[in-house]
Image (cartoon, rainbow over all chains, first blue to last red; front, side):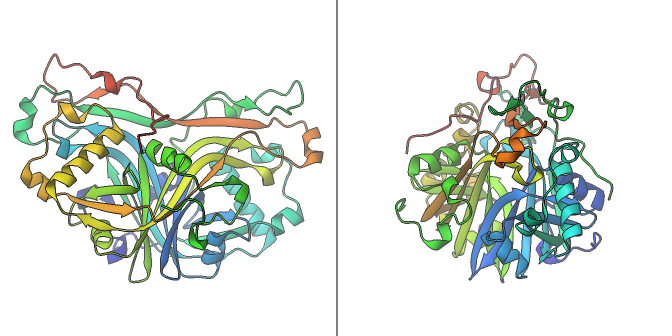
Length: 223
Length: 223
């Protein structure tokens, strides 16, 4: 992944001061995001589908049923765009015009291909699970050979990527700072509630520790 | 918007029991979502860009700088895909294979065009503001004629749309219900923290009521 000289497609055009192309910034956003939005083209028609992803090194992986339109399109090649967006807050300015959001997003491009080797598929599925909820994988029934066959895993090498970040207070026009209007940021965060046990849960099984105080922040993995 | 007979592109292929095509379901998801992901194609390359949207009747509107690559591509025609995704929880099954997420998403298709009339642009910007944080618009400095000129507003009529929803507990294979593994749902929600005043806020201005107990749920607007 070339982080020094992004091509035009991966160059942030608007508000370039919000852009970042370094690996650490990009990886942190990819790793914190619980889902991505995958863009692909079929017969000239764009599709955008949400799905779980995981980054391993310089690639992003998605998975699902072999019958999935998205995975079929990806596995058959062609360039894919994957976007991960984290909302951090509403930016309330004194003028309507300068309202904004605080966010961190990554847009990446790559050519997808199916992962064929069952042992590699298993590694990716484990990484997907750890990405979503660390500690879970080791406690549950592992995939059978048949379940692995019924799971299509697709690899998207990160050929190019850019991050775009806005943070901090609103930026108003000079004269508007005199207005008697409250201005600031309303922070937003994806938060977890109390774990809800399955109605068919066997008695005496308590929610595991990783379901308590579940947080997405600070998820950076080893690169 | 035809909600009875979706075409192949708008028909949910995988797990059709999770699909919905009725207007009320689709509108509720579009109205609760704070942002959408816009998919478009430039020279065969798909792009997926996050942005704020608002639904008004049978159309979705997005806005931004006239220099935006996304808005330029949209305003020049061509079919667009807009996706709104709400994450409701992690679904923790007894087997790795049956792990899932609870979510509500809408995928819609339409041909975009720029909104030209300044008075209509103003109406849409007001609706965008009310979509994000009701009550704010009336308190802030309104857009000047110059600011309106510097804002491109794009309309995407909802030609076709589908919703996909998963809710409820995990669904495990029959024999796995005997396992001594906790199973259930970890609910997720986008929540707001305490409002953070701008460091340059004039003294004595308190955060307005609409910044307290901010919630995205139950945002259905009149259609």
